[in-house]
Length: 413
Image (cartoon, rainbow, N blue to C red; front, side, top):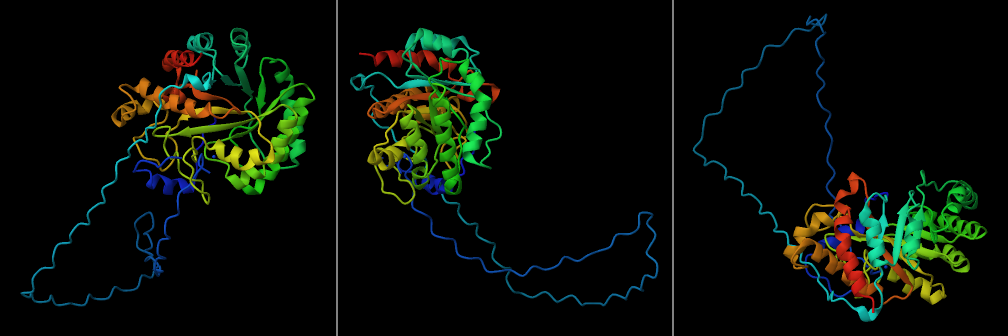
C-alpha cells in the first residue's frame, strides 16, 4: 500500500461532529458534514520595516568617516503617583473537548447471510501464518503486490478464493494521451502477467485521486487498459481509488471505465479505512448529499457509487475492497495516536468493543461482514496487511489470523 495522507478538508468538519454517537448511516459511505461558518476577515495590519543595523567589519575597526555621535538628551523620570496598579489579566478558560464515544452497532455474527466476505491483503508472502490462514479459512479474496508467486498455492488449496494482483508503478503520470499511456503500461507488464495465470484480476494504478480535471483522462486510461488486457484473456480491476475519494460527481466521469469493465468481465476495486474504529463517520453524508443510515464517507462509501450511479445505469459490476481496515493516518479524527489496528486495542476495550484487543477488532469486522454480505456484488474485503515490512508493523495481521479464520469458518453453513 502506498500510504496516503488523506487531504479531505471536509473531514475536519465531520470529525468535529463525531463526538456524539452518530445517527444511523459512498455520499454516506461518503456522507459529509455541514460547513463551518467562515471566520471573520481579519483587519489588515501595516507592516513596519525592521531597523537595519550594519555590522562592523570582521577585524573590528570602525567604518571610515563615521559621523560624530550626538550627546544624549536627558529625560527626567516621572514622579511616582498613588494610582493603583493595573489588574492582572484573567486567563481565558480552555474549552473542554467532548470525548469520542464509539458508535457500536449490532455485530452479532450472521451466518444466515452466507459465507464471510473477509480476506487479506499480502504485502510480502514472508510468514507461514499467511498460507496457514488460507488453508484453514478459504477466504473470499487474497490481494498481493509485486511478489505474486504464492497466489499459485492459494489457488491450489482454495480454488474459490478470488485473487487480485498488482505490480508497483512509479510514477503514476496523467500526462499525454491516455490510450497511449495504457498501451505502454500493458506492454511493460504483460510479460510478467502471463507468468501468473493464477491471478484472477489485475489492478493498474494504486490509489489515484484524479479529481474533476483529470477523471476523464483516468477513465479513458482504465477503459483502454481493460480492452488491451482482454485481448490476452486477462481481466482488469479498474479504479483502485483510495479511502474517501472520489466524490460522487467525479465518479460519474469514471463511468466509461466501468462500461469497459462490464463488457470484458472486469471488476471495480476501492480502498476503505477508518479510525479510531471502523464505525467512525458511518451514517454521515457526503458533501451536498442527504444522510443515509447505511453509508458513510469512509466505510461503505461504495454504496454511494453503486446506488446513485451504477445501479440506475445498469452498470453493476463485482467489487473488491482491495485494502481495508484501521488506518490512523486519517486526518482530523478523534481518538488516540496510532496507525494500524494493533495501536488501538486498548482504546477499543475502553470504548466497549470487547474484553481484549483482538476480540474488539473482530467484533468490528463482524459488523463490516454483516453489512457487506447484504450487497451481492461485493466479492470481499482484503484486510491490510499480512507480511508487511517494519513500516507496517502496527498493521500486521499475522497474530490475528487464527481468530479471523475461526470466525470465517463459523459463517459456513
